[in-house]
Length: 638
Ligand code: F6R
Image (cartoon, rainbow, N blue to C red; front, side, top):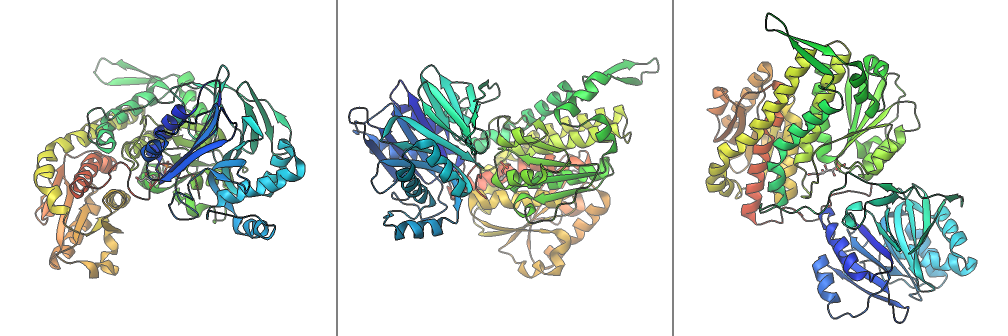
């Protein structure tokens, strides 16, 4: 989604800002802009354009202006179509105040009408331009930055972070944060600003996350920070360890393919990380004379994992309900994990779509926990859901891939996923990493509750290792067939139906989402049992039905019936089945067969193959795989 990069310092800023914008490209955007205070004339010099950062860069070729203060922006359209005019920066009437902005200003039409009445002239259809004009009129009254900003933020509603530059103050910028992240980086006589640390993580790791509801007036050697009541606050600078430097495709054609292949390593790392912080390093195993293994528990390590999650051992033992909140692919991972918590821990688990959660009544259940699952840790819907729960006395935990994210800072506890940077917009390895973390967590809770033994916990980990191997091996098994034959065949269909049952239903939803988002082929997903309640009317030869099997015997039998229902109507059936499920396999036009695993890990074992199949279909269609149209990697508006 939108990205902000800004700079104040002793060097010329243009190259750094363009590089920073390129590092944020993976988040998704449709236009880009650059502005600096020209070093010679101390006037604004800018260029903005719809299209890629490389188009902006080309447009700046031969543009001699550069400066020591500048801002850049990548826009993901929310208000107003994609065109050069709606790209950022935006200005006031005199064009001596400029602004780049992330987020959404609520009720901006009213402010706009009022300003038009007062004589302001607007050139774009964005909410951002309204802020530039509004600030200008407030500043004309106060003639002083601090009271003007305080007045502005008291009037603005919505979620925003912005950077503001004024010709009147050519050596400084103002940064403002409300419900949308901004981070500062520091070197001697240089301050970097970005909406995502990745923009400058190759420059400095000495960073300060602008606190929620605060602003700062920044010069190259000073950061004056205030909260929204006007109270001065001390910037907290910290060294970040976890952030990633630029990653390349390492010989893969797309990031998505690279990330599909990284999943085995990611799952292995997740198991090892859990052991490190308490899952297994606390176990000491003694082989007894009869060759059975006697596991012992080390209490110091036992507590560590719960400390990390912000829970006491007592709270874990007494846990009576788990609530999971997420969006998109992360929500699908949570829907799969619901089966883990309910079956291993024997407690109810509710899974909420973050975008709907905000409208639901909230019940202060004792002995429950809220787990917010987000690859980016910045998804606006999920963050708002976390903020809704935070004031209650219920523990909150964030599971995310980005330790420096807002959700980590705002939740009581945090569990870092071990996926590493996920650059492709379509989530792959974050999904398998989330399933692995939640699977291990559910087993750990079951262990503390005395529902499984240490040996069973060990076995659960081993099952996860095996599933990771199968995830990778299955891609290899079908690589030739998919690339040589099946991708071409299935790229010719323009709609698909996906079906799953029990734990394979949320997995089918994930498969349908993957197909839709990268190939733009229409896909609809149903629980297989719902077929006969309506969707069966859609079955015909030209709509492949992709059915995901299960290793639960009763569920499997029902899945066979669903497959028969499809075949009886001359439907085209594609099945993802497990070894030995011949009755189902024999019904299929195309089948993918995966070795048997722990039934709860069936979806994980099929993950690589499902993603690879969809990736190859999309490649045949020639779509922009890593950056699908209209999508953003980090969805920071509600
Ligand atoms: C789909 C995808 C999205 C995200 C969703 C939530 O491939 O990536 O559906 O899963 O936008 O994002 P996070 O996990 O960052 O909260």
